[in-house]
Amino acid sequence: MGNCEGCETPAPFLRANGVPYLEPHHIRRMTDGGPDDPRHVIALCPNCHRRVHSGADGAHYNSTLATRMLTIEAKN
Image (cartoon, rainbow, N blue to C red; front, side, top):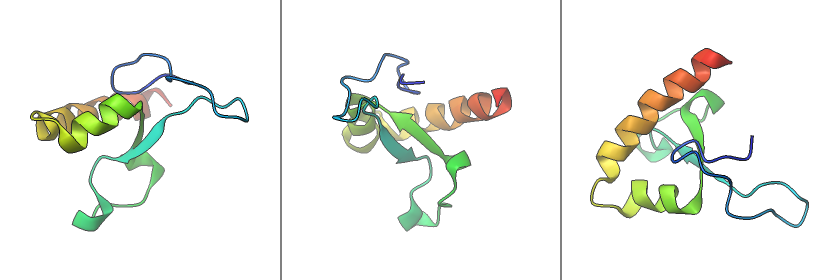
């Protein structure tokens, strides 16, 4: 816990309450009809989150995150 589920590095900092700072990312955006369900949300560091939404390879990276999410869910 506390690592980005994209790049697997530790969260960049701790919040005031001591919790590692990661951003939730919906693998399939809710505005595109994606479910608001924890099984479809991955925890990303700010860099990975910006990569998905603003990077030249964002759509491809999001696909790799969707595959990774299946692996994460299978472990739980």
